[in-house]
Image 1 (cartoon, rainbow, N blue to C red):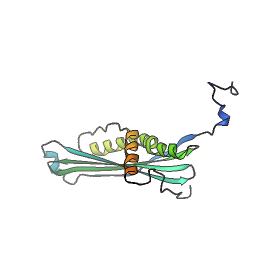
Image 2: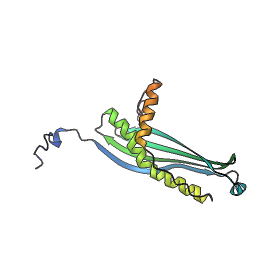
Image 3: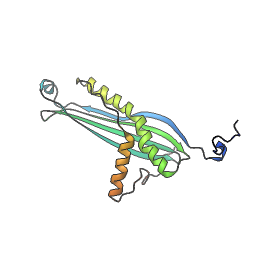
Image 4: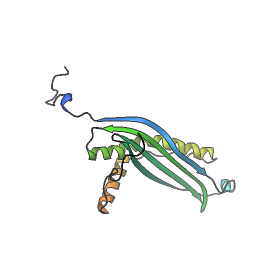
Amino acid sequence: MSDETLNGAAPADDQPQATFTVEKLYLKDASFEAPNTPQVFNEQGQPDLQMKLNQKVQRLAENAFEVSLGITLTCNINNHNAYLAEVVQAGVFGLSGFDDQTLDGMLGIQCPSLLYPYAAAVIGNLVTTGGFPPFPMQPLNFEALYTESMRQRAAQGQQSSLLANTEAAGNA
């Protein structure tokens, strides 16, 4: 059966094999600040929450990449800073056999999609350990975020690739 052609496709041996592996997931950085405690616990009002995301890609070797997803969550109540939680969740991913465009998409969509639940859990833990009500982070559509980022870069005439300025680093 392995030598048969399925649906007119060439046998798998004739096609380059694309591989995606998760080598390691880890918490790279975490911090929590609640500068106006305990007074802020008595504040009445609707919290103003702002979340910022950032992502960095670093090539470690020809087929190894570190992807870092940073999340900063700021909560203000009545113009007083209640808390600031910052997390950088990272991973080392093995990717080979992809064309440049697909590789860029994997690094910009699949990798942060895998990192996000871990980062969200750390943010949630920091917030509740800090004495504040839980903050359930909603799922994010990294494909839409990636597409918008590429559109903005193209409009600004910038290189529209996460890999544009990455060179191998370290001894990996």
